[in-house]
Length: 293
Image (cartoon, rainbow, N blue to C red; front, top):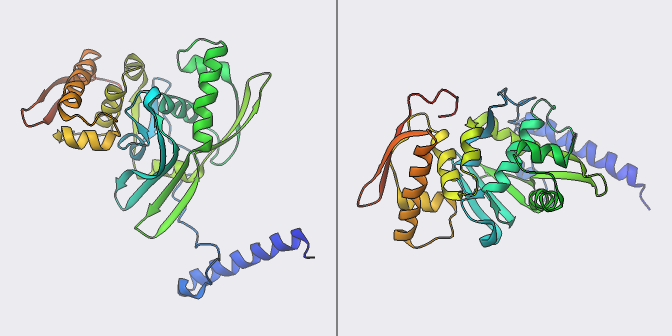
């Protein structure tokens, strides 16, 4: 029987030979079916960009699509290989229990507290610290809420396809938890962090926190924060991008109007209009001093 250690070493030698062949320009067709795929280009920087405690840094690809949908948690559904973002030669698909904007709050916070940790390394935190960052009290119900959100991201599988050819698939994060002390060790997916190199946005955290519990407003806030000069966009396009479960156009249009009013009230935009045929126009607030919008 082959020694397992020797099996691992054989795979390592095989991968090294493959990398050498790739660098030599040999055709990928030389590799037999069942071999490991050629490595996806590592886009991730060695560390994340810098931002202050007043904001949260988020990849544009995350907040411009439906990976974290504009839905209420009670309406979340199971997704199987559904496209949640597409553009710039990249397609992101998700399999798992649907993630919502409260899950994005948790993911943004995990990124925020670990942003000085080298990519791929584990980091430690207590559940109470994350709840404090999120403005939530410590207690049994809130510990359970946080744990459920983290578990959705542990079990959720993301696949990123570049140029309709190379696909990288992984869970969003790995976690170890002490059930007694509520201590966690988390390891974030490196390739998901690589999305920062394709463009990222600093989200005004106080503004986002003021919109808590309003999924469409939260999604629109992220959308407009990620565009320096936001172009007009149709109600139908917003409905498609944000992953809303509301398929009634008139009802959704009314909710978008209400959400835009809420975003205006917190000072994130100066004004907005929605035409009769459903075209949304937004004017930026020139006095919004925090980066991100």
